[in-house]
Length: 170
Image 1 (cartoon, rainbow, N blue to C red):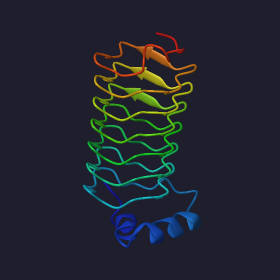
Image 2: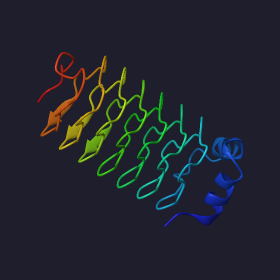
Image 3: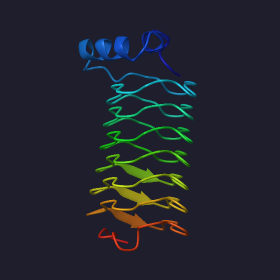
């Protein structure tokens, strides 16, 4: 359950949220289960934030900072997530279908049963990421870097640009 005081800070806008985060870096904010459909969250600092079960469908989170964030069971369908930093994030059971993930960074992220079907993953970085039973069907992975990534049971039907770029373990 989301912390109502923390959610109130976010509702004041990204600038207020980021200022609050600077003063509260030791906290692990709880925004679990919140409805942020279509929200404007460009440049938001969600480092180590619990966004599990959150609905971020259609949100604009361009260049947001989600390192160490918990996005398990979150919905990010058709969200704008270009240049987002997902390093060490937990994206297990999340739905990012149709999302714009151009140049997103997934280094060391966990993508277990994550849905990325139809997503734009061009130039994304998956260094050392863990992808198990992840759905990449119809995704555009042109120039994606999968160096050291672990791919187990990944669905790749109709994926663009993947076969030439896979250097991870299967």
